[in-house]
Amino acid sequence: MTLSSDEKQALKRELVRCLRVEKEIKKIIVFGSFLKSEHPHDMDVAVFQDSPEGYLPLALKYRRRVRGLSRRIPVDIIPHPVARARARARGGIGASTEGVGSPWRRARWQHAPKDGGRRCSTGHGGEEMATRIFSAVVHREDDLYVAECPEVGTVSQGSTADEAVVNLREATELYLEEFPMPETSKPILTVFEAAVNA
Image (tube, rainbow, N blue to C red; front, side):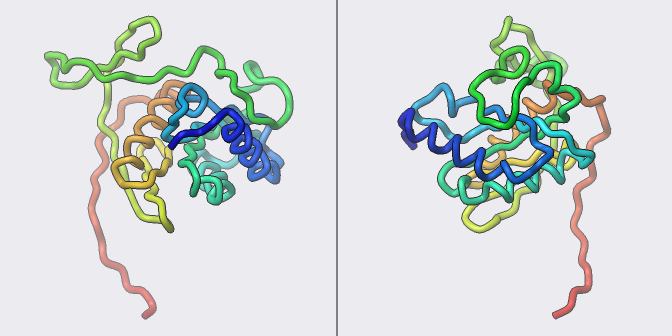
C-alpha cells in the first residue's frame, strides 16, 4: 500500500474522530512505519488514557472503535496508563507524530547465542536483549485476522494470520519495552468442549 502525506493526515484525523468519544483518552501518538515509509504495513498507535480498566479490555474497546479505519490499514493500538504518560506527554487529544520518551525502537533479529535462546539488537545504541517465547491466539473477525498474546494481553491484527502474528510480535515488543514483565512459566494451551444452546 502506498500512502501520500495527505492520505496519512486524513487517516490520522479519522483515527482521532473514532477515539474522541472515549473521555479517558488524553493523548494519541502515531509511530512506526506509518510515519517513516511511503508503504506502511500498519498504523502503530499509543493511546495515553486515564482509566481503571486493564490493558486488554481497553485494547479491545479501542480496536472496535477503529474497525472502519482498520479495513483500510491495520491499526495496532497500545493503551498506556496516563500516570506514566503525564511526565512525557502534554496537551489534549490529538494524533502526534512525536516519539514517547526515548525513541520507539524496532528489534532486528540477529544470531542465536550458545544458550539456545535468541537475542536481538534493538538498533538503538546496539544493546542486545534476550528474547522469550510467547503464545499467539489467532481468530478471524470479518475480513481481518486478530492475534492476541494471552501472557501479555497485547492484541493486533492483519489481513492474513501470518501478518497478524508479525504485528502482534511488534506490539508485544513495544509494550514490554515500556512495561517489563518478570519471567513466567510457559502457558499450557489446550482445547475443551462445552455444551451450547443449538
